[in-house]
Amino acid sequence: MRTRMASRLTLGLLVCLTIRLVAQEPAGAAAQVRRLEEKWTEAYKERQIDILSSLLTEDFVITVEDGNTYSKAGYITHSADPSVKVEVAELSDLRVRVRGGNLAVVTGAYHEIGRSNGKPYEYHDRLTDVWVRVGNSWRVLCSHYSIPVK
Image (cartoon, rainbow, N blue to C red; front, side, top):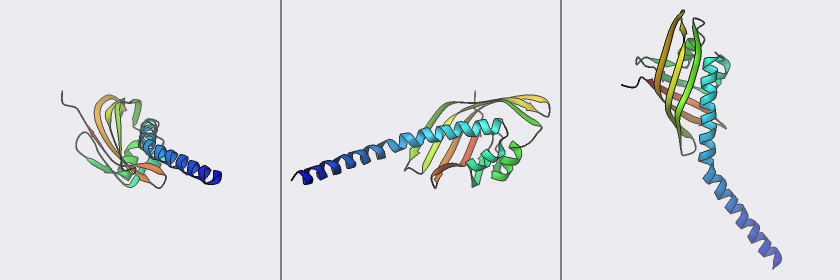
């Protein structure tokens, strides 16, 4: 009788823990994606091409402020351009929404200051990034940057 009661109690605890872990997963995934979004920004600023490449899906596409789109290879080539020096790369107002455990959408603001061919520039953008789970990690599928209308 005690063994049966202990087994039921153990099973009940395992079910409760499983439910709790499943319920927490989206919050954990959102925090993980947020950290990766910040890692991506820092890797872009520091021109860490190997890190950038590891964060993007092979079919990644980015749409930039002027409406042009670039593939993963085009984005990596741009990011490695030695004539561009990013001095400030800041994210703010980030919101991460996870859907179905395999898809995350990040919206927020981006501010960049730097020099291109020796000339100063500054951007204030809004962004939307779509992350997908690939195996046990997250990667960026697509990204869209636009200049807010004043």
